[in-house]
Length: 124
Image 1 (spheres, one colour):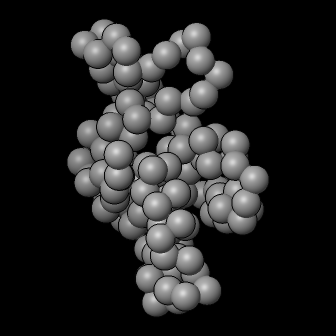
Image 2 (tube, rainbow, N blue to C red):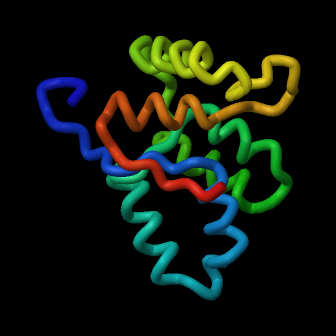
């Protein structure tokens, strides 16, 4: 809970799950799946983190536009989350490769899930 009211957040989705959803369940075929997914994103039951959006935007397909259209689900990390990311990096030094130009969303997804006490949707 971040304020006077309970957050609607139930899940934080990682880029791996978004990529799998796009690849294995195209919206033109799986309209019901995407309808439910869209509803859950609109109500903020499903959220994600800024770093996932950055990973998605490295692509060159319709999911990039989808991420831009759904930018409200991609949350900026809180101070509490950044502290947790630092703790994860200390415990698992290879979790983020600072010499890579590729974003590393995993610790931010984990920190978000911990912060809001929600489940992670991922596939790796």
